[in-house]
Length: 584
Image (tube, one colour):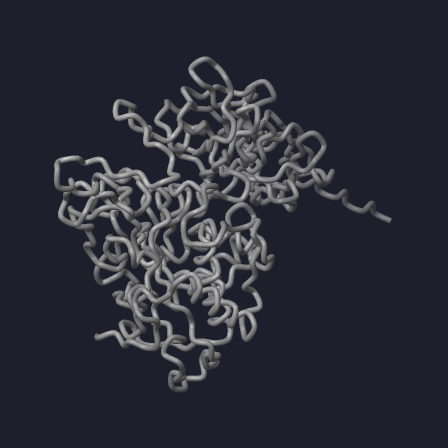
């Protein structure tokens, strides 16, 4: 379906001055959230901040669309479920149906998993508009996957960031360099840890709007950010692309969509035209196969269009030396070495290796936070500490442990002592060992691995919640069920795994083949129950007990992880007949 072209700015027309003026107008009329918090964004211009490594942003600082929203407020969307016709309104306010559904589903999912983030779906819509024009006007199939791949330019340093391939070309088709992928324009190295399965099909596909929207939501909400706090909202947007113009542009679309929007059929959304790299030679980020021309050069190249040297032609007479204007400094002697064009090494360039910085034993019980934090130090070959270096900590292995904030990757800048301390680790429910790997961002040095262990939840004491004697007649059932409470260091021990066994005797823990028994789901006799678990209050109530025809005293033993045990007596005895009344 041909995409409709609504109101938009001409290609290349959105200069810094125009953007600033438009943002100012939006600020005055309908966008009170557009503020200039210089602490949270870079200086004027669309160049990325030197404080943010391109590999640490969602898009790798890839180009984006610069079209501004109309100054008139959009038509509010109709009330869901009315069954009425789709509301008409400004074309720019229309969002393709599947794309809009993905944004709203992502908001609902984040409301459950990270309620403190307060992520509005309009923020995802604003970023989706700027990154891909709402998936190229909603060119997606019924499952939300783009009809054709949406790829950014090759990030080979030719007018863009230089990011070597990290995915073997599996997402972007390029085995040499990375490219931003999909409707939310994730680079493969970011998608590797930020990717999510938003449509429940078992895969994490950056080309699927449901997966990409949910991933973008989690990416923005990490580090316990609250989108209701302007400063944190700004930081979240700048983490996507660290540019002042990008921040103001996204905020403008956010406020525009908050005024109202309406659903349009897939494939009919308006397409943007102005791009942040209009003066660069790269291809469009929405071209299914954009490849920069082989002859393209970075801006300000010293080469002439014809390929010759840019020095002045030799004047008649063969003397190639240009006259020196009066008062100008004398040129250096002809035998002087040319000035060096090699930039001085950064701190990162001097890092030779990583060293552990006193990390203690990493052990935690399932569901608890680790008391120790991982700390790594960056050092030169001579062992000197290197400050202001980015260290990435990545959780590796079959585990559901995370850093605080729920992420599996964290990047920290080393302090003046060259030490980077990772956020606190929180154990999941999976027990066993996993690895946290520390690497230096932007420097190929061996990583440093830390082994962490998650142990099962434990109890050190068990006690019955009632002292009622447990008795039963042969062939009958016990009137009371056995209930116990597990504690650990005096506190209720929740989620502790327990086993209940009818044992032969106090000195023989083998299963008794006579006496009381439990029943399984099919009504068959069982005398051992495994995989029992205490509730949130540390309580465990066993199923009903039954007795066979054997009389006597029997033992039920309950044990838990952590070593807590309790032995309960069960009495099976025939009912005692009441004495007959004496004759009068």
